[in-house]
Image 1 (cartoon, rainbow over the protein chains, first blue to last red):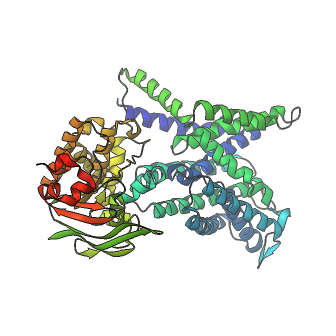
Image 2 (cartoon, each protein chain N blue to C red):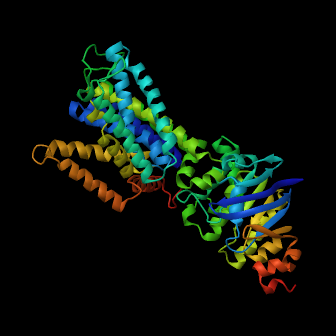
Image 3 (tube, helix red, strand yellow):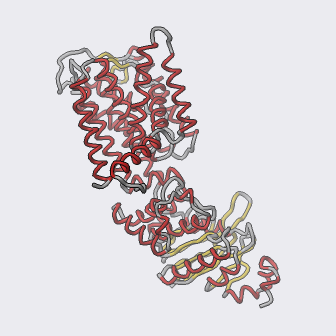
Length: 335
Length: 241
């Protein structure tokens, strides 16, 4: 048995476990926490295409979540179009927005790029907050939009219990991880990594760095918008502060930093660590010590940044490799 | 046939003329050396040719095509590759990964790119280090990695910017051998170098620039005897022979 086969078996086991998990987790609260873990893992993996591979730090991804959520919700509320179709329309709109923001900002480096994307996200939020009607579309300003729980069912993207949401976001997560894996082994992945690390050298080696980044941004914003629709259908209520907020953008970046930017497992591991920390500390300390969950969240972030600046995926990957090698009875480490 | 032809190329940075009406050409299969004191404009001339920035005046022809204002990635695909004086490895990635970025210039497929990269590494006796992180390499190996990456793009013309600076004498000898094998593979080489021993041994012809202007051109022997060159740069010890 080679380590490759073991990897495949381990991966299959994890997927299988995720598939049967709702049979054992009967509590709606815990299932909701799991859904949020997957949602954030999905968002962060989408973000990682730009923030990890392309080596820049976008902090305005909540704008794409907002575009996705508002597009599908407005289309469904005002025109009765299925959120599934609205989700794709939102994705296309977000792609256009992503390319438009990427064109001028990808020339900037480091903090300037991050600041520009924050301005972009905040700009969109302020606009939505102050616009009640955009042409024929009813944005309803700061009050947000409520999706009345009508007919549940797959076609309406609305369900009475949590399980369907769990499976939808699980499928989306598996899809986006598969896409990331494929990109990391493609010409585009090499171009993004190279361009992120040493743009001049990458250009001299035939990489059109700006174009590669734009492609990554387009994909990232499209995928992020899909999650916006999912979030809207999950909570059935969206308003600018909740869905286009900086908190959303920051938390995605935190998860990526803690999990490990630019790796495939990093965003998932980061979400698995941080989301439960955030949720459970809110559950247990929320009443007695308000704000405690944020302190815990911040402490975890600081500790990981000090001791594992490349994220928790690195020691975990090493540990996994070690276990595999022990299991296969090898002494030398195989790369 | 001339593979590279530079005609009256100038480059201004504000009021400073870094390169002044430089004219030179390289025949296919030749090794041309470009020397000059520090700040003479060698790297600027390279950057203009390689498309980092366009020349302010003059023309550059590569393989019969005027390439003024072409972007580096397009030039690379047409067969013009370069290394950097200050090495720029993708430090967090393995040597093989670094070289594969180069070999992806001519293919879309991962497996093909990988094979080509391994071929290049083998030809440079570098294969044993393929899994080493580029950030952990010695300076000599980093310079070699620069060449390996550039070679992986399958260039017709290779611009080498001080690939021997900072190397020990034994490493210089090895690098000279590597560059000579490049020529045997049919690659034309344009090399900037400060180490006289190396450039004298390597070059078919040498161009000397000083304050952005060409002050001499010829075989290594001619250049070494040239009064102006000696004054500007070489010092007496090369003037005797």
